[in-house]
Image (cartoon, rainbow, N blue to C red; front, side, top):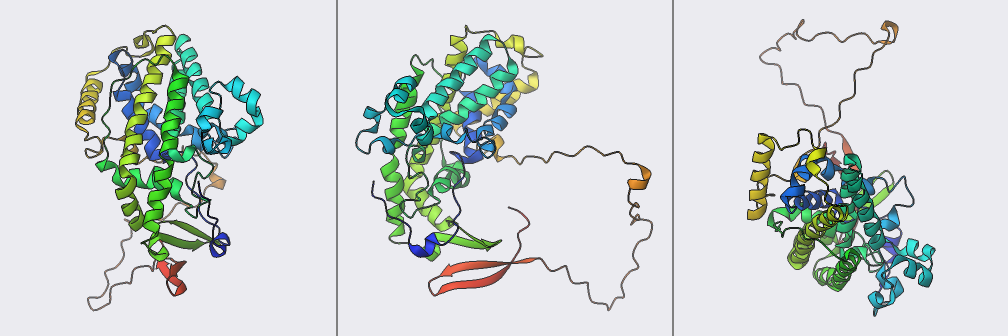
Length: 397
């Protein structure tokens, strides 16, 4: 893979990196939800009842990366470190043999996702054996996360964010920007889960497929770069002394035309391996009756109706259009509990506005001007150089 280093003027900037994990929160949560629909009825009722929690916890591995230094290597494996010609023929599939050949420190440095998936699957199997609902939900969600990571091509290369080819930000563009913006165009229907006799082989096959998409992932972006000027290709913002760069919506639209089918294919394929590994862990544990872990044991009428509606939309591929994806719904802020304070610590209560309404303004008095929105300085790259402008602050994201 040809590596072109960043020009000096960009190297001087502090550039924004892609999101920490594959797919972003939106993608991971969508994959987890769809995986529930692919389960057999013997498992589906239990998983559907816990689906909101499963979906929420599916992003937990990314959320703890900043606090847990051991977490990051679990999400990828840089196959091109071992060889650019035949990496899958040179890396042993079994962890102990890979350690013997390359050392544990080397594996940790360049990623361990295939073996982390196996470890998490084993933990889920044991959770089923112990009939531990909390552990079943936890490991099911985390298994979904790591499996989904294996479906992203950029999680199989050292050049994971395009940082070596002057394409920094490609990771976030591929895994987050495209699926979030074009989810209505993607196909989320799938096949029923199946028992997997050799999970490790299935995982390595998935990684090999992802690695095979790398060339197109970079080359299609390069094709657009040749015809789209930098001032159109990127958006820049300057805040708190740092310049941030990301791909523009215009570039995302062109890139979607080039690789949208690939992103859609990987997003659609991931849930089936997730659900199949859930099923395999359940069968390997002896097929415990999950109804015994549900209270009430049988799905309620409301649950049945809601599930049937979602299953119908899933089969017709209208989940996104019908706004049935949990990832599409805004998360409500958790309200803090009221704090009980002593009288001396409490501030004076505000005056009630209804008790003293404001006097009406004279008919010929001008209307009060609205408060001026806060302005922030923004640097924009143009063909003539760097231009400073002031823009209104955005109240949202």
